[in-house]
Length: 332
Ligand code: NAD
Ligand code: TDX
Image 1: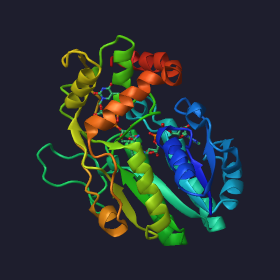
Image 2: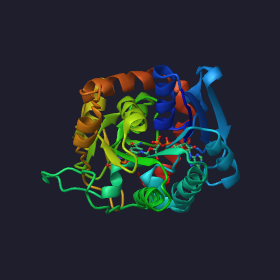
Image 3: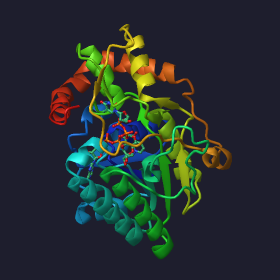
């Protein structure tokens, strides 16, 4: 049995991993989270107090980080500023949390010999043409586009350097777009579901031909636990579930599943520098570690996500007005 420190555990994917670990293992978990606008402690309600604690703190605060890293067997590092649109508006918090925060954690892992797993994104590889037969693999060259993805790329490179130069016991995973319950309403899928639920029209950036490779957050969590337990130190694993869909298809499916006409959405101003397509080849993770996703039908996973937002208005309603005010200021 291990004590795992989960940074960013009050966010969307971090809280999913915390629930997954507590449900499926005997490990105990401490969450370290700054509780930014993106966090929601309601996502962690009802977890067993004997195996679970939350510490509010900044991963860039070396004093807080040192004691926690010293007293845990492993760090799983999710904490980050995560939203591309916000990074276009104000990049600075992305540098502080994603780069300096990761550096601070790595230094503590180095001092204390603590196992470290770094959570990253497929966006570090830039984007693909719609008709490119290739998908991203572990050997694709880094080519990030946005302030967000460039800070995530920087953090990955720091981890690789700390493995090679200082012998830190680290692994990295780069995952595609996640969906599921507990995702902040600023993100694409929950924004459109909650728009329909409050009588607003969904908002599609540009023509909506951009492709994202969707994976359910539960499948991301099972992959991360697999890598934490059996991954080879120093290795990178790509996580994906063959879920490519363009944004227009996703909006139309959401509208259909909510009983609306499938053209009842608005086109709004496109994201500057908008990546065209992401696509993951997860062969290494599947063949080397035997991982497979459980959610292989996107329409079914989306339907259960819609049910969750319909049944959990108290979780998302307090975020909605502020998120939409930010979009309105950007013409989106
Ligand atoms: P999120 O925005 O929902 O959650 C991020 C959490 O990190 C929040 O709880 C926030 O309070 C916390 N945090 C931010 N800065 C912090 C700091 N300085 N110190 C401590 N805590 C801090 O994000 P998410 O979608 O759950 O993403 C989690 C991780 O997964 C990120 O590293 C992101 O890059 C990566 N990722 C996300 C996706 C996706 O589709 N959402 C896909 C691949 C990878
Ligand atoms: O209202 C919208 N309309 C729209 O068309 C919003 C919010 C988004 N979009 C488009 C932009 C993207 O093509 O939908 C797609 C998905 O957008 P986001 O949810 O903002 O995700 P993305 O930019 O793809 O990044 C996500 O996946 C990779 C996460 O936010 C990142 O943290 C992760 O690294």
